[in-house]
Amino acid sequence: MMKTEFLGLRMENPIMAAAGPWSRDGESIRRLIKAGAGAVVTESVVSDTLLDVRPRIAYDGMGAQNIRLYSDIQIEGWEREMEIAKSGGGVVIASISAHTPSELAYLATKMEKFGADAIEISVSNPMWESLEVMASHPETVFEMTKEVVSNVKLPVIVKLSQNTTNISAVAKAAKNAGASGVSAINTIRCILSVDIETGKPSLATYGGYSGGPIRPLGLASVATIAQTVDIPICGIGGITDYRNALEYIMLGASAVQVGTAVMINGPEALTKIITDLNQWLEEKKIGNISRIKGKALRNLKSFDEIKIEPATSTAISVPCTADCGICIHACMYHAISKKDDQICVDQELCTGCGLCTCICPAKKLKLDW
Image 1 (cartoon, rainbow, N blue to C red):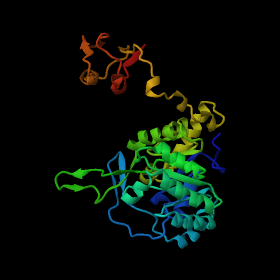
Image 2 (cartoon, one colour):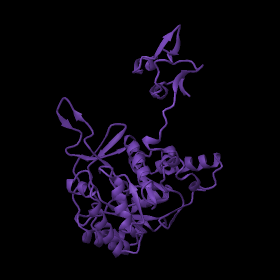
Image 3 (cartoon, helix red, strand yellow):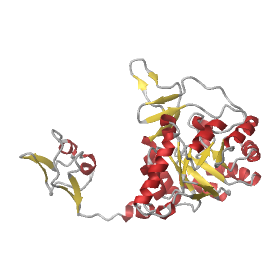
């Protein structure tokens, strides 16, 4: 039911752990595999490691800013870490990042030698402008990917950034260079917040934004890529429960990666997502998760294809939330009012925008055609 083949890799399920501090070494990766991860992506490996700044993570209850750059383990040290990581079985994908194609290929060949099952190329970094620009240039992504593909026998995934003007062109470049698949999206350049009393930002520099709030961007990116190229996609961004994983899969992803949820709730976050997803599939009597891949993608239309239909909002016989009135205040067309404690919709004024149906806590309002 949950078994998945991604890039030729046989995984017990499509729920993977993304690259990050939670996959920083062999023991951390083993814990994630033990928690049930279908695969684990290592923290990004680079040629020259840097010391961590302190503090480097900020969280506001919704999203996180992270300014940890890369793995602090030298490339040669990953020989031992990979041995530990794979000692209990499981699929381990090596994330690598570099400034030049030759440097990237060098890291890839090393990680292949150390036992990685696949390579994920990270072509963006929210902290360093040079790497952010790299992710926006299809020609650069093509050269970087081609060099790695030419030097290893493993599947190669390219991790794409949402901070680009044309993610379709970048995905095409990755495919044309021989990439086995793409993953999307990386974290997004951000400043999480500013203390208005001190004038200090939450962290001292720009960082990568992750967590639930970026999921709509990740979903749109995955759908766009799925409509552009016919190679496997791994969806990333704001996955906190099994429903979010299903959203990505229904928009064309073959697998998903979880990061911030693991950072906040530990490896058990993976276990819960996997357990709940399996239960949902059983309840729906879906024999294999691949059956629902792309289900939502088929319902997406271009703006020009949308028919203008006479939909208007209607109040149904559900009790209102006490002392609410949010729909009345939010209606930009002044179509909603309350008479004798009953919500009324003026069908002449209502334009069917749909906002009230989303914000009503009692779900009293619905669109009728």
